Length: 420
Image (tube, rainbow, N blue to C red; front, side, top):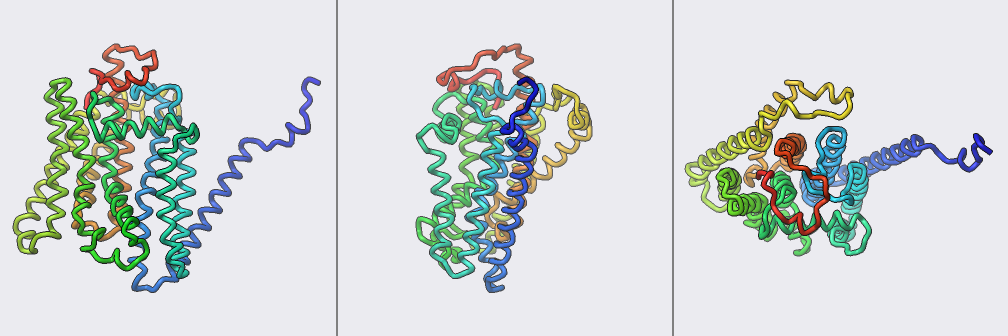
């Protein structure tokens, strides 16, 4: 009968109850992991405790940082959804793209799996199960790689393959550069430290140095003085530089060459820093250290200038954070001058501090480097809002109507309205 609620319907828990139940389980799990990890660290000898944590951070901080970036990207998508910016048209996405909810679902699983593996590593290592402890990061890395390349239609197959194809086009810029290509490549420059730590972690796994005393030797194959570290750190910048040169070839715009010059300024910062471990101390102090300082200042100031004048376009700030519906958040952000001063000021400070991470000779304090890498990702997070908003303003001003979803082969074609 109409208006009568069945016993089955009445027995079903409400969405609010389920959400609170999941949050409660998540908090219990988090507290349990923290307790086990803390007890495991305290079991270690005080003289080895710092080295013990350093190795654990090396294996797990890359995936922890990636997890945080996925969370932040979900926030970016949520804000764009509330605003007048159509990010699906900016990125030429089809109907199968991941929404902010799906990004948060992925990041939730990553938040559960990565710390759980790290907790198991700490617990097993501190209790003498060294071989089992050594297998934890190896299994985790294998799991992540398998999920990324898994060929069956689960775990968001189309989105995974779109991401992998984008990475391939970044590494080999043989086609005209699209907005997703150089947008993702810009994000990868903020994750150069992640690439470096991934290389060192995989190197130790391949050479069976996980949870062994061999990794302590700085001059070993996978040590902190390895020439592979600056080579991997510079890769994202070289990819971005090659993209700019490819864009110049296609468009003949001189701005592409100036942008390429910006990325080239990161190269001397990285390699001059690495020279400290391969030249005598006097030569480092008198010649290479001053050159490193000069190149760091040039790179920081040039990158800051480009962010403000090119990537963001100060003339478009009046349109930043325009929301579809009025809310507390929109009233705090839209048209408020303080947010522009905050973004410009924080971007300058974090651009300068980012040099710390690019410099191998300043990377002894792993917690400091982790914190700076974390702040760089937050800088990139706020950079995304202004960069995508600026691109959307260009599209709307150009009068281009993007009402049709492009075919896959059309995604490889460059667009004249996108600037690198």
